[in-house]
Image (cartoon, rainbow, N blue to C red; front, side, top):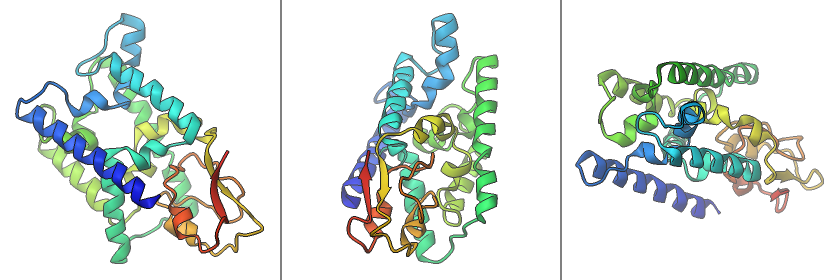
Length: 252
C-alpha cells in the first residue's frame, strides 16, 4: 500500500504543478485555489449571508469542503497523507531529514501544547477573512505560495515563510501539519469520529514501538487498541513497519 499511496501523492503533486504553471502562463483560468477545500470554509460566511463567494473562491470550494468533511468522517484525515500536495512535499522532506539524523521530536507534553497553535491560526484567519471579506491568508499560505509560482499576493517575505516551512520539515516531522495547518484544525473533531482507522491486536502486538517511530504525525500507538487520534491520516506507515503480521490492521 505504500507504493499505491506514493503514486497518489505524486499524481496530485504533479497535477497541481501543471495547474499552477498553466495559470501562471495564461493557459487556463483555473488556479491552485480552485481545488482548495479550505477556500470553502473561508468563503462559507459570505455564501451563507450574502449569497456570493469572496475573491477567487467559488461554490465549488464550499462543495469540496463539505465533501472533505464526509471523507474525514469515513476515513479520518486520509486527505492529508494521500492527496494534499503540500503535505506530500513536507513528508518527503521529512524522510530526508530522518535518514540523515536531523529529525528532532519535541517532548510529548510540549508536542501536545504546540498542536493547539493551529486552532489559534484557524480562528485568526477566519476572523479577518470574514470581517475584511478577502483572502487575507494568501501571502502566508505555503500551499498557495508554492503552487501559484509567485502570482498575485505572493511577495518576497512569502518566499521566506515558505522556505522556513520547507526547511523546518527536515528537523520536525510534519511540523506545519501538526502545529499550524488551519485545514487540519477545522477537521479535527470529525477526524476523531472517523469510522475507518488503524486497529491494534494486543494479543499479537509486542510493543516494540516501531510503529510510533514511523508515524509521520508522532501519534502514540503502543498500548492502544484503536487509533482515534485526531491527527491520524491513515497513511499506513505503522502497518508497513510492523514486524508482526496482523498486529495492526485497518478496521471499522
